[in-house]
Structure formats: C-alpha cells, structure tokens
Image 1 (spheres, rainbow, N blue to C red):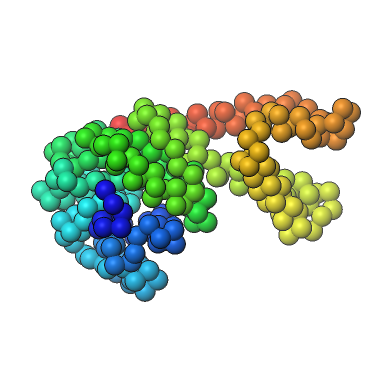
Image 2: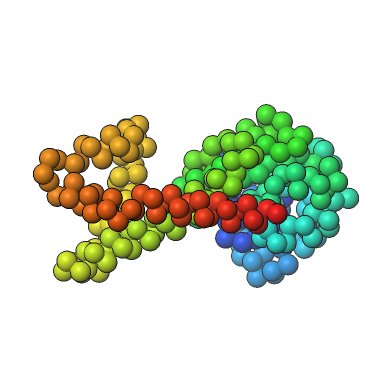
Length: 271
C-alpha cells in the first residue's frame, strides 16, 4: 500500500489523534487532502480543519466508506458501539488501526463480523512531541505490508516496535503508562533539589535535563543501563551512596510492581 495514494480516515478527534495526525503530516507521509476526521464534537472538528486543513465528517460510516485506512482513536468503552455502527461498511480491503487500550484485535474483528484487517497499536503521551514509544501487533487477516504501514506511521511520532499480540498488555503497562512513572520520579528529584536549597524552577530544569540526557545517552551509544550506571559510579563517590539508598528502599522492585499493576489493569479492560 502506497501512503502517497491512500485515504486515511480518523474516527475520534482527541489529543492522541491530533498528535498522530500532526506527526504524519510533518513527516510528509500524507498530505492534508488525504485525511478525513469524524467526531461528534463539533469544536474539535473545527480545530482539526483549521489547524491541519483536513476534511471533516459527522458520519462514521461515511468515513469508513471513503477510506483505505481507518484509525480508531476512541476510548475503549466506546469501541463496541462504534464497531457495530460501522460493521456493514467495513470490508477486507480496509485496514483498521486501533489505539484503544486493552481491546484485542480478535474482539475488534468479532464486532466487525470478520470484516477488515486489524492492527493494534499502543502509543504514549510523548506522541505530542513526536517521541512516543509505540507497540504494534498484527490482528486477524492483517498482512506484513499492513504492519509495515503501521510502523511507518507510528515511527513518525517516535519509536515503534512490532510485538506479538499476547504482549500488548505488557506494552501498555510499560511504555503506555510509563511516562507517568518518569514524571513522578522527575517531580521527586526536583523536590529533593528544593529541599537542598535550589529554586524550584532550577531544580526542575536540572531534573528534566538529567532524564533527557540519560535517555539520549542510552539511545545513541547503545550502552546497557547497567553499563552506563557503572560509568558514573565512582568507588566511594556520591553516586554509589545515592544508589545504595534507592536499593535499600526497594525502588527497583517498586517500579516492577507498578508496571505489573498497570499490565493487570490493561488485561482487565480487555475482558
């Protein structure tokens, strides 16, 4: 499927849909004239039309009928009703990409009565700055080309990786919810800086840059986190003392427990 020739329909005009659309347009994967967006929220549709010069539509069925790829960008609790609404318009020539947490591709296919090819994606909030971590899996009838199309779209808003369907809940708990864990850690580090006498904004700036720089170091050097940690942990130095305190507080186990709790919740949403 050639992206330059496809028609993309987006059902839902929330923040994630906005971030994805901005990314693919800025990357030059699509042009505004190839995209149509539907939603019941007239104000959001007006914003999309003004900001991105895309077409808008009230009817979800018309969106499906006129599109080659349909991005399902709605809340999980609204998915079943939407799929029942568009079922008769769907067919196996159309690729459906869902970003709804916890809703399996089998469930989507079932509610579409087996019509359409399904891809599931779990992006995260960093899509707003084109730095999302996105997990992608193939569903029923989806082809290798469909997976490659989805990877191309979501690599435009960050880093996308293909995983097996049974691992999508793990992706949700790790990278889907992960930014919140990072925000909490940064906030705590900034509080520590304030406690030590730094002005609030200075402490926050230093904390944010520390996380950003550390992540960039790992991404660009290929070092493992353990190897990078060893490079800044001098014998008898300040860093090893700080790490010792974190380990005494079981911070590593707490992070693992947090990810596992989010994974369990993702599984529950899919029931």
